[in-house]
Image (tube, rainbow, N blue to C red; front, side, top):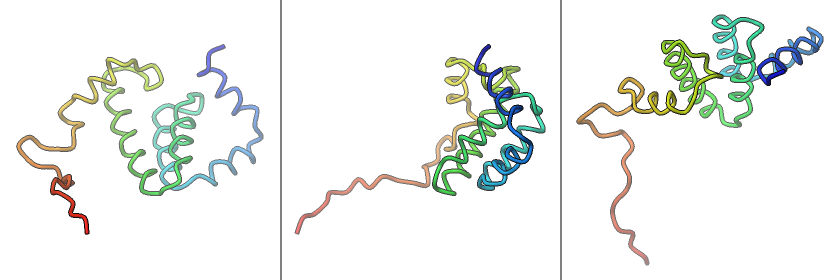
Length: 123
């Protein structure tokens, strides 16, 4: 039995009330991602729970929202390549990182965040 088969089996063993309580304790970014992925992949797939659980374990709300947004972009890219996100291999991840629609900076424009390049004076 593979890991992707064990996760749904373990969840199915949980009583419905316990499962609902676990989902209600998640932050809103994790619940939103869970609902989005559940609509795409269904109850039997481990991806919605694994991805939302990963998002939910981060302490900062800003990190949760940012990672959820990036995960949605990754999931959409992988789905368009006809690959399940849990079966994606490194070459696909490299292609995603180099894909022009996934880069944040536009060609010929500076990023909003600039590194400070001046010298630091000491008192």
